[in-house]
Length: 83
Image (spheres, rainbow, N blue to C red):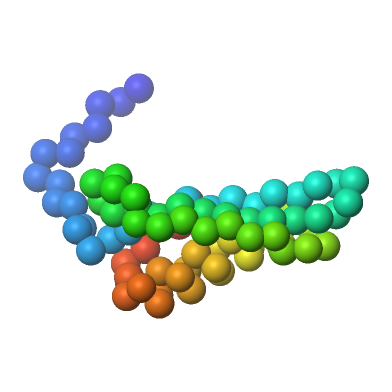
């Protein structure tokens, strides 16, 4: 591993991070998505989850990203990292 030099690195305190995920049950083709948003200190901001219905896994992943971005936008967050 290479050492990471973070000296002088400034945190962007307006930025939030949203981890999202989609799930898919092959037997029923039923899907869901969810996510959690945190600030730069790792403090919990909000979470979400919901059933999507019948779709493919890529659609559930996409829906999680879109839903997360919409909620962040509605709450006034403009600097966002999605994982």
